[in-house]
Length: 366
Image (tube, rainbow, N blue to C red; front, side, top):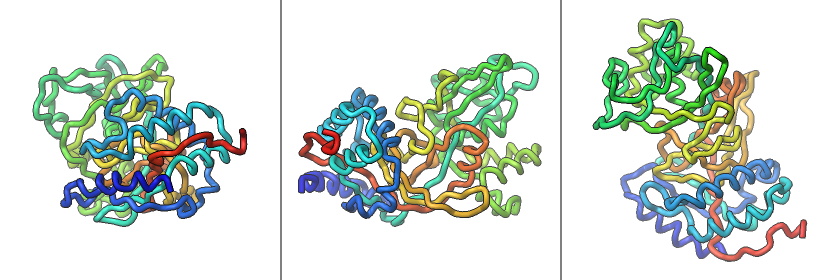
């Protein structure tokens, strides 16, 4: 079968990763029939996200290569499937499914540390702010510092370490919401005149991300740890809130973007709710179709299957592991709730392009 020519390259990528890295990818060739509920997904939605990613990756010299310089399939194979996708702009779900089945091979992703990946969620927060420091708008939103090395920790920044050393994009009225914006990576700020300003991830201070829920539970501050319970506690305990938030030394810097677009991911294009996935960009890369089979929660408290094809378009400081993923849920109250509840193990499959072959794919149309 034609995709066997891809296998030596994939095995080489896995073997060349340092043996001490317990989060590196181990790829096991699978079949589409192994993907839970594959035929029940709406692949046309994922197809459009894949095409958008292709157009950006066409211009990226390092596309389909991880930060460790290991390739995720052959660049020529990616270009072939991307060029083919441009010829069929509006497929049905069945046609999109046939495209992926004809041109890709699924590989189950595991790591030396675990067989299953962890799938969490994120959303686009909405804050209130001003372009000038006035009234209730006192908390700065920083852009990338200039001439600062190494970058200070969150606690040092909150104590003024970047005063005059980093551009201030705007000021917001809620330091707790800004903290969660750092976790989400992008969001919107509503100005006093009603105008929306987008702010997107521009960089990080290089300090390790530490989830504050664990130390809060260890201190007996929380029994159940979710985004909502953490936020409620911080609001209810303003005198202690900064101390707790500073337990996470990681700090995010932003750049402004148009306010009328959905949040942009690290790939530089607007994210698609329920189809855009943030990944560990040290061990994975952008533009790869990724099928996840995990669980989510509904308002009644029931676990429900969450199985769908997504596309890697973003990253985050808390994502460590080849099969670690963060599902983008969108913007709004329900989406915020879903993102806060999402935290489950699941199976993760990378769809990698066949090394050779091709030709007309939508045979049922032509």
